[in-house]
Length: 392
Ligand SMILES: *Cc1c(COP(=O)(O)O)cnc(C)c1O
Image: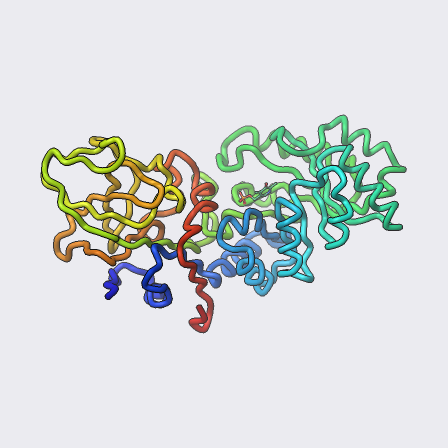
């Protein structure tokens, strides 16, 4: 018998609890309607610039097979992935979409891109030459994007490379350039001087390259204002409800919720310790709920809490229960002593992420960012996709 904690749950939660099989250790609920609404809100926010969607890493762990069709149905036409394998999947899910591969091409891989009409984002002259050669073999230049490095020093062409390319009409003639893009290093900090610097570099270098759409902003860059939008923006994290910018919230709402089962509730006598390495010991009697989520489910081990430390939290009906002791692979132990009317019992669902605990909070508590939490969350959990008409 499953007992819910309905009072503070979102209105749609009963549907996803009811849809989970009784043996599910956890639930990862993904609201596809909210995802679509987030994309549309960002589209409206950046208009007349165009809004793409970044769906790399299996749509940030949420399932590209469901996320891409939902975004396509909402009107999205441009999808960024990281790898060719992701592009192949995206091509089957969005047959009409423009699919761009951020990692570019690895040596010898060009033909595989043209076969599925995926556009590589080319970051060096070596890649550009290979892609030009692919165009020669096909008999016509193939679409691609060019990545300019404006100061991130990760991927992208340096200024000398851009100048070399700009002077090489033979090579340029072999390319069908659809987009010129760059990526910001510090866009999550709106006041960081690097933002304006990279913007300036983009303004200087961009005119050297042929006419094509221009893109600079990801989720956090969008919140830097219209100056940073150019022709196309590339949000990922914000689509999934993440707040990437410090201080300038994106016009989006959470998309993901996760819950895990209470497997057992046990009473701990003073002096008793909890978990590996006995890192937590009780001075007073404590009640401990053992929950079916561990670091293999994306509940990072860094959320452990030795005696006197604060680590991660779960929540019941909006009330937090702190992790005590080590997070292990499949389990966490939480202090539910304060829950006595009603008390937490076996079979209850603990909120891992949801109305009480945000992605940002969970990431920060684990010494990382919400992005990493999101991409690692709930691989073993039962997935529920919420869509209009109560279709699950
Ligand atoms: C991942 C990525 C994005 C999306 O970033 P978010 O912060 O998730 O919006 C955009 N552009 C590039 C180059 C990326 O690598």
